[in-house]
Image (cartoon, rainbow, N blue to C red; front, side, top):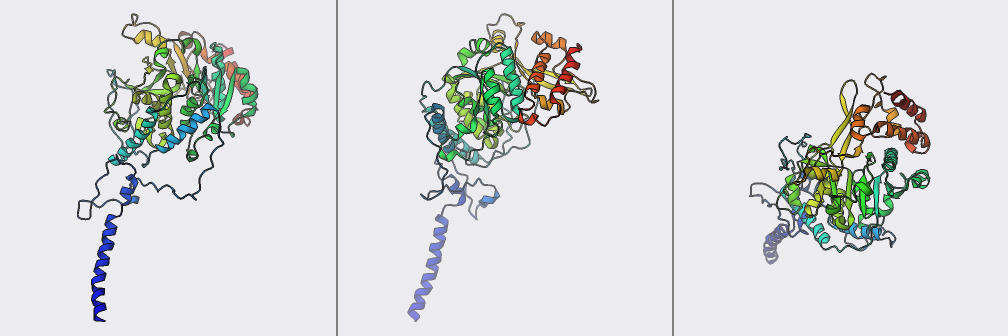
Length: 517
């Protein structure tokens, strides 16, 4: 009995010591998060005797639950195999995009970047103040997964012949069908016969009458985005794509090799096949981007995450505006793939990194940023965006943005330019507030001054428009608003319940334009 007690006394402390050592050797939640990232420097783990205890997961560390490894774990069924080369491209790259997904909490911004024009004398971009609050180990993690994606991108060998020809891409569906149709009509009035692909998010947004009867008469067709997304790798079925994210994927999924991307509310005033695709700077650069009004506000941490030593030199001081974009996939497919990566993980990560919650945050900075990271050529139009507006009786409100012709811009702003007073012609009207949606215009009060009785013009006086465009552009647009509003009042879903839509459109047109207003 005494012998047994003696052994028990020795065994208990030994067991307790072994349990303590096992606990100390076990990986903490903190190390489990990053153990699959050998190149990420872990934040220091503080012991109880150190200055601070390691935070628990619910105190803010970016915890990612372990992925299922069991062979019996449920998985999303694979999409049926496709022989379409664009589907195959998406199947390949959706898997890579998913593999390189961020594993951190969303980017947290302290307040928001200011919305103001750059200082008058600023000619090149200067680093904006950093408002990102995430700890350095989350930035390191983002950098590592960006590096994983870039390794795949740099080793990618493109398959020739996947894309063909020139064309225009628009994202439509729902409330965007109306202005998109106006834009297509304006494209035809500008003399362009290029085919147009209208991307709609899913079958719910697909309108058979528009897509199969109306649009084909305008050499336009509908593409259902969900049909292509469904061809992605099985692990990507849970990707949440919406709003701004659609444009980068529409560019990627379009069958065209040379593409003019237009927002549904942006109208071409020139024929792209003659005035854009055949002229410098597009023919040399392969990517043309237009400016916004406001100062660029990206976080300096974006360039660290992208693997660059610092912000590239000679960036323009203003941010970009993606109501229109011109790109050649033969030279810039990798740029579009990287832009797609930034957009798919945009809302939680890359949008706030590139804008820091500034007004208009979204996809607009992702295209030029992708080109800059890849050291790919691009041209940023230097002629400032112009503004058109209306007097409501209480204030002067902006209605539309005017973007300018790249070939004129190049002639005027290049170092060898000889005529600094040369006119740079308008190329696009981006009518964003309000949009040229016939149903919304008659129901939301934008056609009247604040007194609710006096009708007003939205784009300025007739003389101002004649001076800028050579025609009364607003009257030309209203002719199309009346035509399409009356033709499609019972076709476009969101117009069907708008009482007397056609007669109210005709009434405004007669009051404003037939009386010589």
